Image 1 (cartoon, helix red, strand yellow):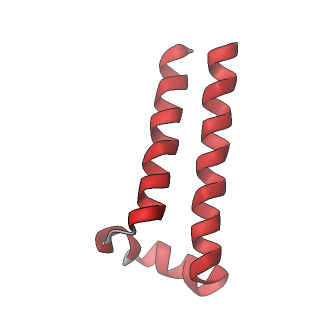
Image 2 (image 1 turned 135 degrees about the vertical axis):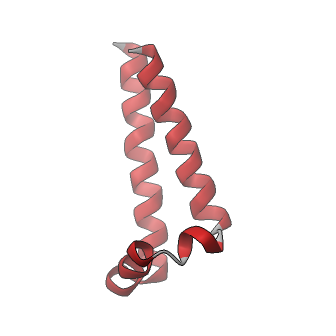
Length: 65
């Protein structure tokens, strides 16, 4: 379980980095463009932060199990 905890925490960090830096290769993907169309630019950023928070909480929970 410790390996999955580390993986989920690293994934959460990667998602936060993507949300902050907004690399063009990622943010120009069709799926992200659809998110922006539905949620708006700020809503898409918030979605990324919430997604990262979920995986961060999962990682911490797996560490304490």
